[in-house]
Length: 101
Image (tube, rainbow, N blue to C red; front, side):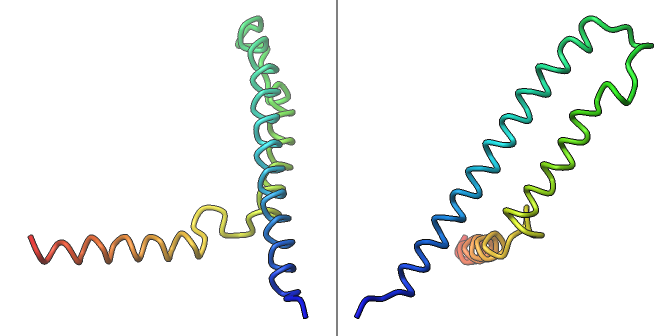
């Protein structure tokens, strides 16, 4: 009898990695395209001509990128449970050596 739970965990982990990779590709394309759009705006426009609409691509695409990030990482984008556990262990290690100094 095969262990299907391990196979399912592998499939789930692989999908998560693909989702994260997709997000970082999306982020990279967002940055490159918006830099290429902004360079001529700042280089060739008068400051009086620049309006909020000059940044509309970055703003609206950025909103979409935030939704993509939320879909991939969930609500704990920065401070995930894994991060909390690592930080607790790190602080405990520091305290352990603190008493021996």
